[in-house]
Image 1: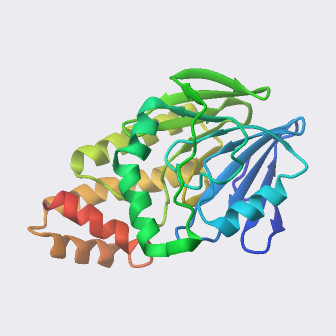
Image 2: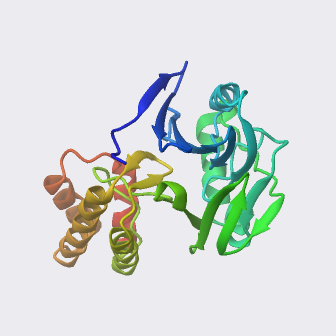
Length: 263
């Protein structure tokens, strides 16, 4: 499946890009919110499973309206646990470490920060997890998934469409990289995607990407390590990265990366 082969439905705020795999459809919801969230709906036989949640009240309402004629069988909540008022009646699936991340860990700090930043338009309530899951195969609504636990939460393989969901990629934007060791871990994971030959890589803050994008990110991360090794402080590091990648978005992520490389 080519990442650009989709049909688009324009909504009042966001848009839905629909990938047709025959028996399965992937609805990629571009929220157009302040943090560029993406939400994914895997549909088969008019039943659907949602991956992640919108977290602004207007997006919650818009997506619920879009889904009114589809039977939603469950929601997989990994890295984005805010938006708890969205479809509260359906089953919510998550790993124990992802629950801890959102309730007591880094996820909670992010939610609190967004609440302070965006105020009443942001749904800071946390989804109530009804089904705590582990690694391995999981079937919801007749759709198979493979759960892979990560440090903070979990990634999701969708075998029927040869796709994988992870938190972040973004081939032309900066990422949060917590030092050279973290970069190596991301690189290894991206190499595994290439080896497995996934058609699409789905992430929380970007439209669906492909293996060429994964290789672009690998090259970026390798170069990021080289730049850091030749710089003495965060400012010189940021300036050199900006010089080499002038069109990249995500300046706030680069700021955080610089802080990790030069504590």
